[in-house]
Length: 424
Image 1: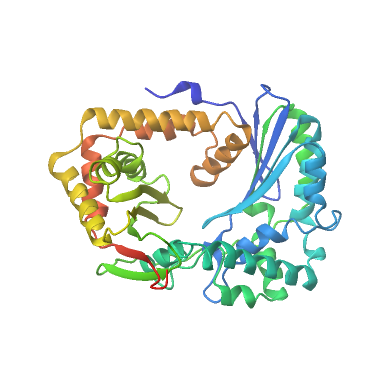
Image 2 (image 1 turned 30 degrees about the vertical axis):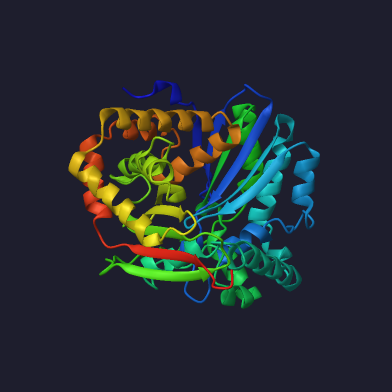
């Protein structure tokens, strides 16, 4: 049976300029969440010009035609709200949660940077944020223990011409080469109402919110047709092994396989598999490596699904003096063991219960609710996909788990070993 408690009421309409608008009313608290997704992420970039989408996550807080630099933060925070933005492979989002009576201000701020940002984009602002992003990369990637793992994995799993080959933050040489004209063109290509969706969730009146959206967004002009992403099909012809020396105390192994897309046929089964492997202290790999054999400090498995492709990743940190080859063999053997002996009904049900509990708990936050609605609209074109999303997990069988292991985890993979430098 479908989880009927997760059905929501909403209104959806599209402005003449192409902006999707979804309104979900929830008056349990006097708060309103404003969440806007632009359908642009690092996958929309090109080799040699990476990091643009993430740069705009910074630039869009640097002022627009009617909002001075840093004032977006100040207006929201002085109203008692919070705000932020994030960038992924496939989208960039910006969001505010404010007391209900500040809805109009939040919409004004978002509309001003959508429609009136370009004239305020200066070389000085670009130079400033170029330095900020470069420092962020140094701090969180280049000089962070294990900080380069993600980009090493993806750049080896995905070929050079694949949109997921480069890191979302961008390559350092590209960050240092940001040019104002390129940045302006990127904005004029992707930051358009016809490439965005706006969700308002919380304590508001439908008619009032609808009129406010029209007042602030309807006159913003759409851009020409948004360029489509070319995604090459590829097969990893052999296993790849990379050894990276880093300033770390403990060695760590990463295994990455190409898998299914977000909401793809096998996506839910891969999520359940990851939970069975490492989702709790009783999970297969956690119990085996951390408790029973005590050869790992920690272990995690997860299905990272995105719009164009997916990646299934297993990560384990070795205990001191434990070779990574031993960890790898134990991981591969346990995966093979799942195929040979299958999983128990208790394991499967425990995983489904855990997933349902985490899912429902996350939606008690109006900010997360708004973002999930936008995600469903982006991926499925149906904002009210909560029940069907959860239902796909309940339909996963033990045979599905065996099938996805055979289909994905028996294929070639990328192995990354991060080991301490000799002088550590």
